[in-house]
Length: 192
Image 1 (cartoon, rainbow, N blue to C red):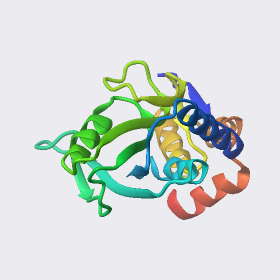
Image 2: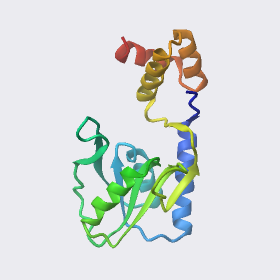
Image 3: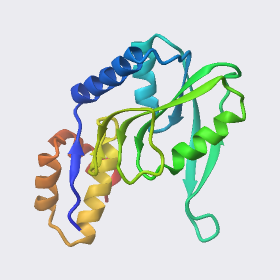
Image 4: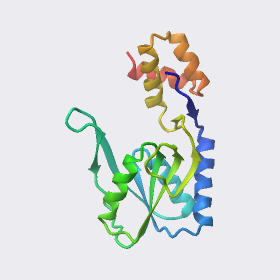
């Protein structure tokens, strides 16, 4: 299977976050509390907190996959900030399947916020949940600048299972913008 990737630099990521913040401000969306979903929404939540000048809180959703609970989304670290009566901006990195955002919205409603608006950096057209704000549509696999180790490992393992050589893997990783230092780091500490 030929995966199409969308590599992001920190500069592009920051520009897209600013674009989202500008859209929120132009729409006069009433928000006074950001709630970021850990892990994917942490970076965007932090940046939007700066751009919008409002505080950020977090909670964690994880998907455990085994025979009994395949794909079940569980809150593993609860929200510790009071949001009762607040206008919440729920933040995640991408609306992919939509399941995480549906679960997160349902979870936050238990705390009786005045409203919930949802923002993601990216929206995938097949998602069952459409965020109120997003920077860009894509069908590609997004390579966020804050997870090089995870993606280098994932791409390497996938290509190894396809029988690709070390030089073919190196060539693809380099073409996606990963530096030799990043690749060496991952190979040294995480790949045997």
